[in-house]
Every structure is written in C-alpha cells, then in structure tokens.
Image (cartoon, rainbow, N blue to C red):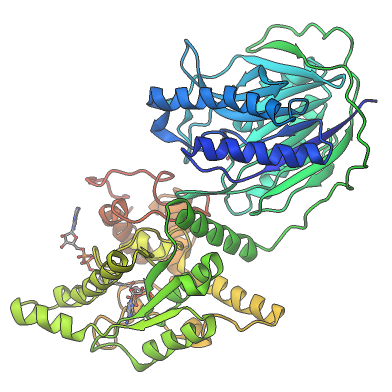
Length: 574
Ligand SMILES: Nc1ncnc2c1ncn2[C@@H]1O[C@H](COP(=O)(O)OP(=O)(O)OC[C@H]2O[C@@H]([n+]3cccc(C(=O)O)c3)[C@H](O)[C@@H]2O)[C@@H](O)[C@H]1O
Ligand SMILES: Nc1ncnc2c1ncn2[C@@H]1O[C@H](COP(=O)(O)OP(=O)(O)OP(=O)(O)O)[C@@H](O)[C@H]1O
Ligand SMILES: NC(=O)CC[C@H](N)C(=O)O
C-alpha cells in the first residue's frame, strides 16, 4: 500500500486580503513540507476568505483571485516548495459564471481544478446567488493513490461527488471547508464525514477554516475518518493547527475505472506514481478531546470578537458597565479576547443607579484589570431636560441615549470599537433603547439568550477557579434580578415574562419557527405566548438596525432569519 503524508492546514484567512492569504499559504506550506508532507490541503476560498458575498460580482475581485492562484504556484516553486501538492480554495470564473473552486498546485503550475458541485442556499448561505455548480469530479493521482476533490457542501448531500468517488474507486477524498460554528455542529459533522466516507468507500480528510468573519466564526474541527466511521485524527476547535499524518492508502489501478456518466463526469489528472518516503516518522495522529458546550460557546465568542477587532483594525474596545450580568459577561469576553488593558469599561451612573450597580462595576474592573472610568450622566440628562420638556419613557430612554453618546464620544476621541451588550432575548422582544444602549459596532452576545448569559458567567468563574485565577464576574452580578434602572425600582420582569419562560418560548418561535398553537400545545400560557410573539414581531425594526454579533445558534438574528419590517401578519390565536 502506498503511504502518503498528508497535511491539513486549519488556518485563518481574512476576506479580501488576497496578498495576506497568499502569504499564509506560503508560510503554512513551508511548515507542511518541513514536516515531510506530500500533500497539503487549505480551506474553502482560502485565497479570498469566506464568505465574500457580493464581491463575487466584481470582475476586479475575481481577476485578483485568479491572478493570486497563478502567482502562488510560481512562488511556491521559487521557494523550493513546488514538489508539495497544494490544494487550495479560491474564487474562479469561466464562461459559465463564477465558481467556488479548488486549485491543485504542483511544480509551479495549476495542474488541476475542481468546482464545487453542491451549493448551499439556506441559513446564512446564498451560494445559488453567487456561483455556478461544477459538473466534474476531479481525481488526482499522487504517489500512486487516486484522490477525489470536494468542497464543503458536497459533503452535506447524499449522492453526487462522494458516490462518484466510490465508482471511481479512489483511495482518499479531500473535502475543504468554510463551515461556520453552531453549537453541537461538531457532532453533526463527525457523523456526516463518517457517512460520506462509507458512501465513497474511502478515507475522508476534512479541513475547515478557523477564525471569524463578521457574524460567522469558523471552529476548525478538521478530521480524518475511515470508511467504517472510525476517527483517525481530529484537530482542536478555535485554534490554528497543522495536522500532519501518514495514511496507508489503496494503490490506484494503472488505468482509472470507467465510471458511468451521471450528473457528474470524472476527470483524472496524473501527478505522480510514487513519492519519496519521509526521513522522519510522522507524529502519531492526534484526536483532540471534545470540550463542554459552555467552553465551546465561550471560545466561539472570544474568537468572534478578537477577529472582528483585529481584522477591522481596532486595538481596543469600550463598553458601558452597569454592574449587570450582560455588560459583565461582555467585558469578560473582551478581556479574554484582547487583554484587559485594551478594554475600557465606563460606569455611567444616573440618579436612578443603585449603589450596587457602581460597586459591582468597580468590582468587575478590579477582578479583570480592565481600564475603568466613571462618567456620571445626571448633569448631561439635566442639561437636556432644562432645554426640552420630556416625560415618561422619553426621559427613561434619554438616559440610555446619553450613555450611548458618551461611548461614541470616547470611541471618536480614543479610537475604541464600541461594544453593545444586548442579549438575544432582549433583541427578540425589543427590550433596548434605539440609539441608546443598542449603540455600538459589534455585539458579542447578540446570539446568546439571557439564561445562557447566566450559565456562561457561572462557567467562566468556575473555570477561573479551576485554573487558580480570580473569577472575573462579581457573584452579585450573577444573582441579582436584572434591571434597566431607567426609573426607580424598575425590574425586567415588570415588562417581560420570567427569562426561563421567555427563552423557552423564543427558542420555539425564533430558532424553531414554531407557530402560536405549537407553543401553546407545548404547555405555555396562551396569554404569555401571545404577548411574547407580538413583542418579537414588532421589534423587527430594531433588529434590522442592530450591530452585528457572533452566531452560535442554529438561527441567529440577521442573515439566518430574514423577515419584513412592514408586516401585518400575526400568528392567529385560536
Ligand atoms: N416600525 C418602525 N420602524 C422604524 N422606527 C420605529 C418603528 N416603530 C417605532 N419606531 C421608533 O422607535 C421608537 C421606540 O423605540 P425606543 O426609542 O427604543 O423606545 P421603546 O422601545 O418604546 O422603549 C425602550 C424599552 O426598552 C427598555 N430598555 C431600555 C434600555 C435598556 C433596557 C435593558 O434592560 O437592557 C431596556 C425600556 O425600559 C423600554 O421599555 C419610536 O419612538 C420610533 O421612533
Ligand atoms: N449605570 C450604567 N453605567 C454604565 N453603563 C450602563 C449603565 N446602565 C446601563 N448601561 C449600559 O447599558 C446596557 C443596558 O443595560 P441595562 O442595565 O439597561 O440592562 P441589561 O440588559 O440588564 O444589561 P446589564 O445586565 O449589563 O445591566 C448595559 O449592558 C450597559 O452597557
Ligand atoms: N461553505 C459551505 O458549503 C458550508 C455549508 C455546510 N452545510 C456547512 O455548514 O458546513
């Protein structure tokens, strides 16, 4: 059996930074070649970053991507890396249209190409809008082994490339991915890769992007799986990683088998019948341990924020610290993402602010070491009220808006990114002040329901204790009843159902697309269901203007859930 040394480069490209992404491929190929790899695979759309959205429609962008592939092939060769077979995702276009493509680079040239066959067009994906599907399975022969090439969604569909790979009797299928994180998706992926390996009757090597792009965070989780479903290797989530392993693979028949014509035809590209055996043995394959749900979500939120800050050229963030749970959790995420000295936390007490809101905010600052400031808002609110006659909700919201003005002023003055702190439950029901506490450029907990915010806070503190560190979040911020403190004695429960009840209804209505009757049949109080659904429907205008934030659930607000703002349909109550 021929032995191939395969490298999977789970790395973090930046959308639009084609030169930077080419440099990453050069650097990681050099590492892979140094480890004796014969083949190295990079993620989907590695050279452009993913997803590039309507950049696909710009001819200059497509041209830059195509040019980068040719340049990369030449530079690999010039750097003495031409013998390593490099599989890399990029944006291509031919007479049919734009293509989500994979290039095979060897000895200074692009020796083969594969166009993605199955284009995802659901959830956050719009690939029917952007790409034309490929109709050819590319099979390359390297070291006497036939390797079929596939891209991401190809793996998620029965039939198609993997079935044809079986007919072509390949020894290995490589699948390159831009597969965003969702809670529990790692379990789904392993099961899928196993199913496709069985379908292809070949080992499947799956390499995924890691890092964040706007609202999506890619968790990596690259893996290699046998046709019987057993795992050979698995990379850790949320970290760049080069997985290098030796695979003993079936030798290809001298002439490729005839494959019946189906929806795809097969193109065979010969690269080599043998490869030099490596001098040093490959390290034993590693199977990274799985982590808890809370750890997984926390790491997703940290990476989502870190990459947003870094890739958009910020060095610091600013947020309002109320002493409450939401701003405390966002501050802790920010400290983990970019370090406490780059996080500015501002306490902005008003006449209604309780003593504990200031004390808890100061306590959080002491625990984390973030840059703490105090900006009392009452004189500014009074100045406004001295010049305008306002009452009721207008005065309540004025406080939140003055805080927003202060945060934006600090951002303009000192260059920080403003973080907004509304959780998914609040976003769902519109419990925030437009142009007030909803102000900001990025919201790390946008997709985190309130009950999960509490769970994460508890988990993060326990994690600190396990490591012998100071827990970042004051216990009081976790246990006290939530309040907007916009009028004396205000509690969230004055306006909203208890969060445990609210979050269950929202999980059904928002994430599960359940109707009113389904929710009532599930045992919820009909009056509470009606009130909640009405609040959700009416708050669409607020969500449409809200800051982006990291997706962690099956259905995040934004691209995953697109609803009209002007909409008179209400769930009927029977
Ligand atoms: N369809 C539509 N399209 C576009 N704009 C629309 C609109 N409907 C209303 N509007 C605009 O929105 C305004 C109403 O929205 P807004 O000004 O925000 O005010 P509103 O939603 O009435 O009040 C904010 C609520 O959020 C609560 N809050 C505030 C701050 C923090 C927290 C917290 O605990 O985190 C809670 C607060 O207690 C209050 O119940 C209207 O005056 C109008 O200008
Ligand atoms: N006194 C305050 N000082 C500084 N920022 C504040 C203050 N009050 C509110 N904010 C900001 O406005 C956001 C909304 O806070 P609010 O207290 O109204 O409700 P919340 O959604 O329960 O948030 P939290 O749990 O952080 O208190 C806070 O997360 C914080 O960023
Ligand atoms: N880029 C893609 O094709 C991603 C689609 C796929 N279903 C995933 O989430 O992994």
